[in-house]
Structures are given as structure tokens and as C-alpha cells.
Length: 177
Length: 212
Image (cartoon, rainbow over all chains, first blue to last red; front, side, top):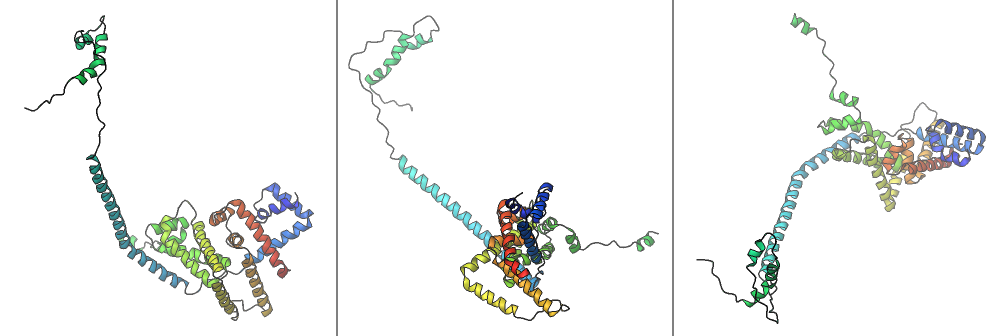
């Protein structure tokens, strides 16, 4: 062990918290190194002085003053309770009001917006050439055939359906009687 | 026959509340206080008041202020005991409060040197009073030497840097473990050991000329 190691472990050495091997190492070093032995003695002597300082005693009025302060604290805490409850209630009411106003405001704003909604126009264009008339049987019947028949007519009909709608004239229908 | 037997029954010695509280450890006393036993707080005060006074006094060096701070510690304990984590040691918590208050006091003093001057002046006046608490059977030169030495030791402690002094007092005066000191001062274990080592060496170095 060198002097540096000794200095690093000196706190634990003084407090007697070193492991057995380290303790022996420290003791051997003290026996060999006069400088470290002197420092060790100096620290121990100084600590002895400090530890033997007389204890400071409380002044006579300490307990009475503490009692008075504790009483005051209790009273303050008690008087603070209703105020605290009122404060909490006020905060809760303020939050609830803010939420309500926000909700009403949002609803009014949405109502204004829904009255001015613009929808995209529906556009259907007529093809340039004339389409061949559909000569196939009703597509519903063709589609209902389970197997063995071609389903192309139904597909063609479906493809041309928008064109037929474009040619047709809208007529007002009254569903109510 | 039964009446006769009843007459001769020796009354059982029922321990008073105070005695029962005295028999409890800190944790038990805290539990009793939180359970509504107000007298448990007085027991905590009795256990810690002198220890805390010595700790705070050695840290800040002003007796009157130290008493005020110890009172403040107990007021805070009273108000916040319900928040105390009972898995930890009560003494560590109390010392943490005291240490923080002492630190704040020193910080305030460094910001307001006038207050420090007034306090030091007041202490000088106190020191000028005749000896009252020394052992009257001692020889006057011994009394003087003891008192002089005590003053030197106290002055030497006061010369240590604040964070060294705190650790030093907690270890040497209060006998706290490194772990407890680390918790109280909110430092890691390595820092505590390093500060303690430096504080011890500085203290020994400053006081050596007076001791030899």
C-alpha cells in the first residue's frame, strides 16, 4: 500500500469500517510511513476534540414557544379548511363554466357552418357516338343463370347504364299519397 | 369467597400513554400520532429537540437562530407528517428538513451581510458574560483553557466550507452512517466520503497549532 491508497481509505480507517485485509494493510503502512502516521494521529486527535464538545441545551422558553407556534399552526390549518373548500368549489365552478361556454360556442359555430355547405356538382357527359341498342335478354335473368351461359350481356349493360341515365329525362316523382 | 379474592387482587400496573409512547420506536410513535394520538408528537419533540439543536447550531453557529430553526423543523414535521414515507427512517427525514433549513439560513446570510454582522455582534455580547455553566470546582486556568479550546474548535468548524461542515457534523456529532448522510444531503455515497475526508483533514490542519 502506498500513501495515496492510505489517504483514500483513511475515512473508512478512522470509522473502522475497513475489511480485515485492508485494515492490516493500513496498519502496516502506518508502521512504515511516518508522514501518514503523523497525519492519522493529527486527524484522530482533532476529531476527539470535536466529539467532546459540550452539548448545547435548549433555552427555558423553548417548549412554551413551540407549543404556542403549534397551536397557531393548528388554528391556521382549521381556519384554512373552509376557505380551501370554497376555493376548490370556485375552481371547479370556473372550469365547468369554461367547458360549458366552449361547448355552446362550438355548437353555434358548427351550426353556422352547416348552413353554408357547398356540395360538388354532379356531372354526366353524353358520349360522341351512338351506342348500339342492347338486344340481350334482361340482365337480371342472365345473371341469375347459375352456370353454362355467358354473363357478358350483363356486364355490357352495367357498363352502359350511366349513358342511359344521361339520356333519360328526370321526372318528378311523388311518393306520398 | 369471590369478594374476598377480589379484595386481595393486586391492581395491575397499567403503563401511562407517555410510558407506552416512550417504549415505541420512532416508527411506532409516528403511527400513533397519525392515528390521532396528539401526545405522540410531544414524544417526537422530546427525542429530537436537543440533537437537532446541536446539529443546527454546529452548522450555522448562532444559538438563537438555531432554536428558531429547530422550532421550524417541528412545525414542518407537524404539518407534513402525513406525507412522510414510512418505509424510510423518521430521523433521516427530520435531519433532511433541518439540514435544508440550515442551508437556507446560510444562503440568506451570504446575501445579507448586515444580518450576519448583527448576529455576530450579538454573540460577542453573549460571550462577554461571566462563565455560568462551567464546572465551579475546576481551577480558573483550567476553565479558561477549556473554554478557550471550545471556542477554537467551534471557530474551526465554522471555517469549513458549508457542504463539508454539514457532512462533518452529521458524521462526527450525530454519528450518522454514510448512507444516511447521503440521503440527508442529497449527494451520492462517493461525494459524502470525499467531503468527509476533506473536512476531517482541513479541520485537523486548522486546529493542530492550537492543540500541540
